[in-house]
Image (tube, rainbow, N blue to C red):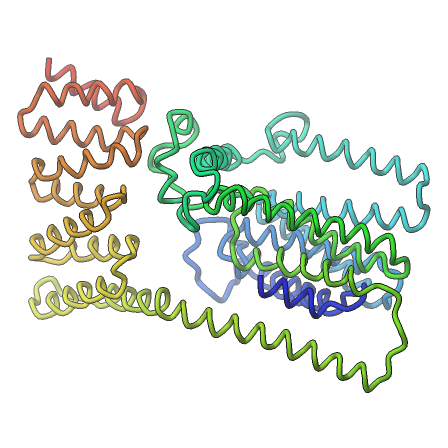
Length: 504
């Protein structure tokens, strides 16, 4: 929001020079680095299970999206006849390079968002040359038809189905359905900011498991608007959509008033459209997400700054520039200080403590070495007392240390009791107790998992196994039957069916 406000205050006129400079810089850096990754000469050895073209974003989808909206902006540069030819050639080269790299990333986000942005830019270009001409209306009809074919292809329908369809779309559809259920259950406030993951298991159902297994988990709706609606409530979603509609209105005002720099406007609008297209099917990853706010702010600020310009003296112009720089610098500095202060306490410090403890080597035959690493791991737990992810990771590391069974069991129980609404905490405690031969103690944690993930049959199967070990055969058979009814063809369902035959 601070970035958007800064963009509104600092954008003057419809040329958007500094915005293009920023977008172009990102385009150059990501393209050069992306081609290094494509050629498999990346100097950094990332632990990357995806396509190797991830740029600096950590994921090919985010990289592809960034290439898509920055590439669209470069098309605007290439078609802008008011720019020097060298800039137009550079824009053309960058746009083509980014599009090819996005294709090589094997993520459809970039090519599709790029196409959407470029379609808008070309439409403005044709309109500027011959407004209301048959060519413009023919182009508009063709673009609409292509859009329909592309959307059908993404949904695995029509001639482009095999080219555009990706299995992840089916998975994302389940995440979107979960977001809609959260909105239905908590329409005014949502389930809580950044709490999608804590509620995902509560709302998924048997329909979800037809597409993905119970082990697949997510902490995001993979759609920026749906994420806002699910976690912050419908009023916030309405505000967000209202902001986008307001941007569209200001763009219309800008095009109506400004005739000399329409292509400069079109390039930024194309980038904004490309960003919005990918945001509908992607998470709000910060390296990508900031651009939605920056571009929106620039378009709003630019639209208010294109009114008839009055002659300004050099002295007055310098004073205005200093004022703008001061305001924007103040906002950036404030955001930076707050961000560092907060992250140092809740992010960087515990992360460093955990990573340092886990990285300590040890010799299983050296009691002093084992004790040193164990104590470091236990101390790291205290740095993040409310972070289930870190604590679970540390407990699993403590469990690897010789002679720590009692400590591991205690901290696992403490974790489960501290986080009674965490499915992962209950699962970890139950798993550890089962591993040390205490099925009777594990049962209560297994039972706590059921209301936290009602449709998941895996913990039920583990409960049935615990009951069988305790010779509670009648209860075990009831649970085994529930597993078979829920997922007869799953590994757990097949094992449960065998167990029922054995227990007859």
